Image (cartoon, rainbow, N blue to C red):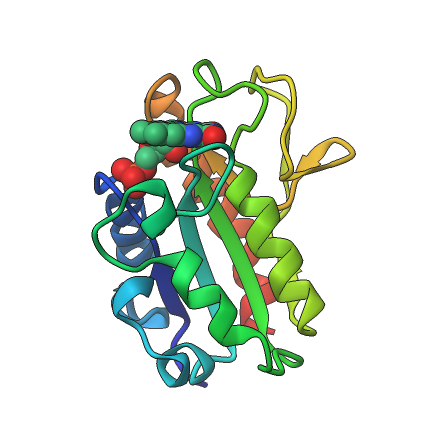
Length: 177
Ligand SMILES: Cc1cc2nc3c(=O)[nH]c(=O)nc-3n(C[C@H](O)[C@H](O)[C@H](O)COP(=O)(O)O)c2cc1C
């Protein structure tokens, strides 16, 4: 079985750190995390099972040149998937955000990535309860769940590791199926 591919976008490095923590916890099961701005489409498509991470920047947007990054990121990568067939791929998404400063668009990037992957046939796993967070609106919510793991390193950093551990236990059987 190929290793789980881990791809992340980041501005100030928090999402990279979480991606590295996830990779360390998965050990041999995962490949080293790759910044999506440096990944080719072939790198991404080489994996049947993926964990992807992104902060939400701008006004509920993916990171990229329009949110002020000097490097390409998810904003530039996503259009490359336009003609890609992701059927057969299983993808889990985690997102970083700030629920106090951006309560109307908390972790929106999870929702943007989810919709893009599902539209191209991927199976997205790893929904996470909204209980325990305080925000008003998010593109990442369906009912009582986020469409991936929400991480807030500004206001709930103490909870992040236990959230990651529980989420990995939840998604491992789905990714390794
Ligand atoms: C200009 C700017 C806009 C942001 N917009 C949002 C947002 O719309 N929603 C949200 O949940 N977080 C938002 N954030 C918070 C970031 O997602 C958060 O700081 C995250 O940890 C950054 O991750 P990084 O270090 O990987 O770039 C914003 C941060 C900045 C600096």
